[in-house]
Each structure stands twice: as C-alpha cells, then as structure tokens.
Picture 1 (spheres, protein in one colour):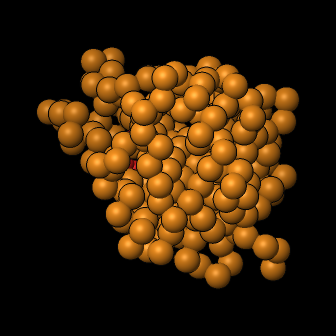
Picture 2 (cartoon, helix red, strand yellow):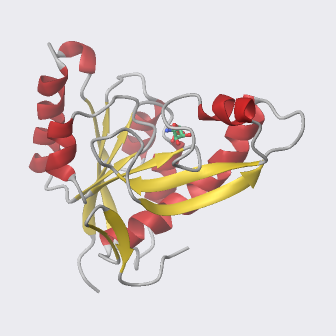
Length: 208
Ligand code: GRF
C-alpha cells in the first residue's frame, strides 16, 4: 500500500461534500487522507465538523486581506505548510486567480452542481429549470483558470421532474455529489486520473 496523499478541502459553508470525503477517507485502502480544511468564512459549519473528526481546520477570512492575491498567498502558505499534495474545492465560493490555479494545476479538483459544460457559475439549479432540461446533475473536474471549465473526471445525472423547484433539484443533485466525489478524488490521488494536455486521462478505469 502506497502512502496516502495529503489532501486539503477548501469550503465556504456547511461542508457536506467535505464530510463525504472525510468519511470515505476512513477506509484503510482509500488513497488519500483529509489533512487540512480551509474556509474563507469563519462561520462555515464545516470547520466544526472537521475539527470534530480531529482534522486541522482553519479560517482564512478573505475580508481580512487587501486583495485577492494576498488572500490566496495565505491559503497557499497554509497548504504548503501542511505538505498538501491535492486540493479539493467543495462549495468554496471564491473565484481563484490564475496565479493560484497555476500553482496547483493538475492537483486541484472541484465539484460543480451541474452537468458541465452546461450551467457554469452560480444558481445552477435555477439555470437548469430556466433551460427546461429533463436531466441535470453534477461534475467533478480538474480546475483550470477559466471558471468551471476544467477537464471532467466524473459526472452523475438526475431527472428533472415536472413541478421541481430549485430546492428539490439541489437536494437530488447533492445526493449524487456525495456519491461521486470520493471515488473521483481516489482516482486522482492514486494517480489513475491525470490532467494531460488539457484533458482528464484515465490510466486505470474510473472508480465508482
Ligand atoms: C454543493 O452543491 C457544491 O456543488 C456547490 O456548493 C454546494 C456546497 O455544499 N459548489 P456543501 O458545503 O458541500 O454542503
């Protein structure tokens, strides 16, 4: 068994995706360990949740920094101090600059609540309802400088039912987010899914 990759999860809120990664990482054969949680908001519920699991969880409050670059430099410093090898964005609501993304490219992944390349940005469930799609879903992807545009590692879809509102869709998609993020991280951490020439290449079949 090779050593587990040291993973940081970046959050802004309740951290239910973070929790799904923490729970998956308890398995002895899981190729990653959640070593650090960083929130840009002090009130993020995920911080307490992570601490309850014995995981170091810190706040880097973006409002305390003069600009985005200094905010990101502090996050980067914390990641390096903790010897982080892979970064998972999980409901992290700050757009990252090309400077930060470039430093972590190929080693940073995100979960987005839509079937990319459809519905980038925010309010994806509203966007799906407005578009009238009959299926919706979520995507785990490598992070590139362009927002929500990175190569796809995993996706899952859910039906859109007549009469659905944003909350109905969000709840249905979230179940799938929790299901697909852990195996996607495992594929990346184990070196099975790799960012190559701007695409996600699987050297071993996708997990999950
Ligand atoms: C998830 O839907 C995620 O895809 C989106 O924000 C939400 C975060 O939820 N980017 P949680 O904090 O993981 O519970």
